[in-house]
Length: 317
Ligand code: 8YV
Image (tube, rainbow, N blue to C red):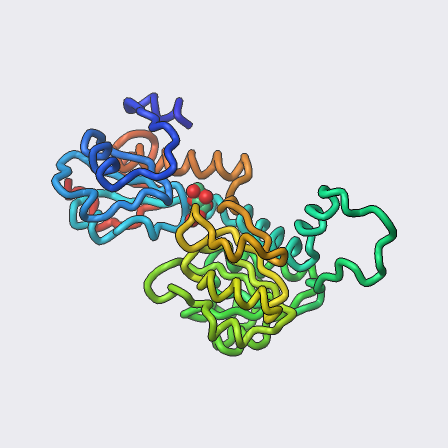
C-alpha cells in the first residue's frame, strides 16, 4: 500500500506512538497535503486552526467519531472512511466474542494454563449459557449489524433488532430479523450485540437502567465503540450476576480499561481488534490510500474518493 502511495506522492510514515497530543497532531498536519489517520487521532477545529495546506483526511476505520466532519467541511478538507471492506471480518469477531463469553472459553483457558486441571472435573463445572436456538438481539442494524444477523441463521437463532429506522422488508427477510422497540429488545434478547455508531445520542445507550432490563443469563457484546456502554455500570451488573457475561472489544477511554472490568472472569476483553485480520487490514489500508490519492487528484479515481464523507468540501481548497 505504501508503494502504491509512493507512486504519486511523497510519503512520510510516523512512528507508532501511544497517543499524539492535539499540539503534536496540529504540528504534523501543518506540513502535509493529506493524511491517513487512526481512531486515536481526534481531528477537530482546534487541530485544523491556521492550517492552509491540508486537503484530505483518510480515516482508517468505518467509524469516524474521531473526525469533526463539519469542521473539516468548513475548512474545505475532504474526509473519507473505510466502509464495507471490514464488514464480514468484524461480524465474525462479534460471534467470536459471543461464543467465547457464553461458553467461558477464556476463563477456562486461564484456569488450565495455571495448571489447575489436576483431579477430576465435576460434571457441573464450567457451565456456560447456550447460544444456538436462542434469541439474538442487535442494537444498530447497519452493514455490520446485518452481517451479524445473517450469521444467526447458522445457529438456529431468532434475530430481533432495534435501529432508528426500520430496514426495508426485503432486507429484514434476508437477515431474518424483526424490528422491535429498544425496551423490547433489552427484555427479549437472550444475547445482545451492539453495532451502532458512537455519537451524543448513543452515549451510554447501555447503562445501569438498560442492564436492569436484560436477562441475567444474557451475554452482552460490544464491537462498536467504548462510550456506548457505561463500563462502570456493566462491571457492577457482571459482578452481581445480573448479566451472565460480556464480550468487549472497545472501552470508554481506551486504551485504558476500567479496572473493575479487568478483574471479572465473566468478561472477555480484547484490545479493539474486531477488524484485525490480515486480509481486512490490508483492504482497509488500500481503501484509505485510494481515498487519499483520489482526494488529492491522483490515481484511477482522481477527484472521486470511493468513500467520501463530505462531498460539500470538494473543490473548496
Ligand atoms: C479500527 C474500527 O478502525 O473501523 C472501525 O470503526 O473501529 C476498527 O476497524 C481499527 O481497529 C483500526 O484502528
